[in-house]
Every structure is written in structure tokens, then in C-alpha cells.
Image 1 (tube, rainbow, N blue to C red):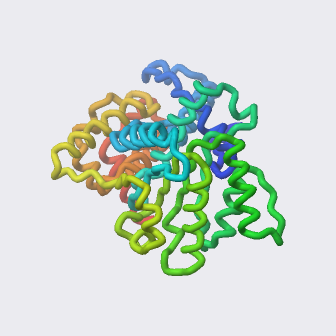
Image 2 (cartoon, rainbow, N blue to C red):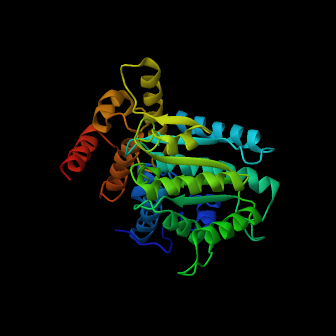
Image 3 (cartoon, helix red, strand yellow):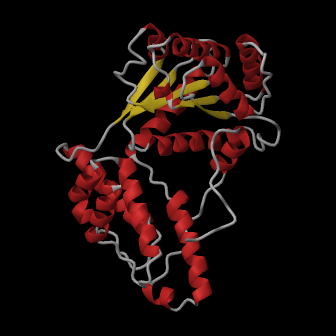
Length: 333
């Protein structure tokens, strides 16, 4: 176990989200087996701690789905730049473990990078170009507004009305020049209750009052109950859809992408002695272990990489035995 002076931050308030989007964990230098073996015990512990942190939170692979999402949001923001009340959005749907959160972070980082070119030091000047809100588990409209207000640091009185809270939130978002709003965990809003229907109405209202591009993300949204009724249609009518799917090896184009992803991960893993290509040769078997899920692939490879870093081996090569053992442990858990 390695402790550092840095801890991961949530994305649910503007300061922490800004820190996440504007900073990166640099990949540590890769040492040879001989160089690693020559490190002192203290130097090895420090090097291992840096590598564990990078594998845990800094390793990001740009996938075809990520590139598609970044490109769509980029185009949508251009299309929405002159619109008022009719902005188009993006609906991102996928099963659990498909890498939705990682994809959202990549999209927000790309947008943040472009906004920094337009307005350097925006955060210090009080601007919040990107906002991230999680839909509340109970789906109640006041709880959604509270989550949004907490992100911006807006204090709410217990007796304050929904209309008053929403009005102050909209004013804050516009004053902060919010250009991209991500509403995650949308599956928490079920269309089967009046309260959740009211929550969707509030989202639509905010969508009309804030000239921003909206991303709605959640589990199994497309074809689900939430978006099948008249309330959900208010979201789908103005949103294009991006369905995150598993990589099916029977489809040549997806199989090719999967093999390329394995190779990219091998090159990025901060381990000593592993030669890229050793795992790519077993890409189909790895797809079976992960059910073709990118999120599960990332968890599997980074988990095994951390295990190898924490081992006493100077050569940390990852084999299929390591992956199958880890996958079996995960399945048993």
C-alpha cells in the first residue's frame, strides 16, 4: 500500500472539477529491468508509488468511441453557438462497466482545453465553462437543483421555492459562462413517477434558459423507460444519441479496434520488463475475460499492472495467467 500527498477529487463541485480537467498525472519514466534492480530500497518505493498512482488515475487511452464523442460535442457546440432556447445535446448510453465516466472526463478535458485558449485563467476570473451534475437517486426536482447549486457553491434556504432556486441557478450559470453541462446518472430518473417527470421538465427548462450544450449520460437510456414517454421525448427530440456497446469479436472492424486497444494499453502501462505485443497476441481471449467491455478491460489491465508493481519481481511482465487469475478473482467477488 502506497500513500501520497494527493487524493482523487470528485467532479461534483466547480473547484475540484477544474483541478481534474486542468491537471494530468504524468507517466513516469520506464526503467529497464537492470536499472530498476539497481535502485535503492527508498528509491524503488518512491518510483513504485508514482507508478501505482499513474496506473490508478493517470492512464487514459483515447478510444474510437472517445474520439467520436469529442468530435460530436465539438460540432454541437459550434452548431449551438448562435442558438437561444433550441440548443442540441448529446445522449450517451451504455451498460455498467463500459467506460462512460472515463469517456465523459475525456470530453470535458477536450472542451476545457479549447476554452482555455479562448479565455486563459477563466477559473480565477470566476468563470465555470463546464459543469457536472449527478442526477439524484430519488429523482426529485428539488434534489437535482440542490446538486446543481452545490456544484456552483450556491447556498439554498430550506424554505426556498423551486422556482426561486432554479432562477438563481440559471443566473449563476449564465454569469459563469457555462458552455457545457453534463448531467450524469440519468438512469436515476424514472419516467414512472410524477416527481421524476417534473425533474425532466426542470432540465428542459434550464436547457431553454442557458445557452450551453447539454450531455445527458446514464445506463441503458436508449430504449429504456425514461426516454420512452412524452417527458423523455423532450430530451430525445433535441439530442443525438451515442450508444456505447461491447466489442464483438465476430465483427471484423470491432475486432481490429479491440486488438489496437490492447496494444495501446500495453505501451502505456508503467511496468518494468514487459514487451508490448505479448498481450495483443491474446486479444480474443482477453475480450472473453472482459465481455468485450472497455471499462472492464481498463480495470483488468490496470489492476494487474498494480499487482505486478507491488510484487518483488524485477521483471514485471504481464502474462495471461496473471489476467485470468485476476479475472477469476473479480468474478468470484
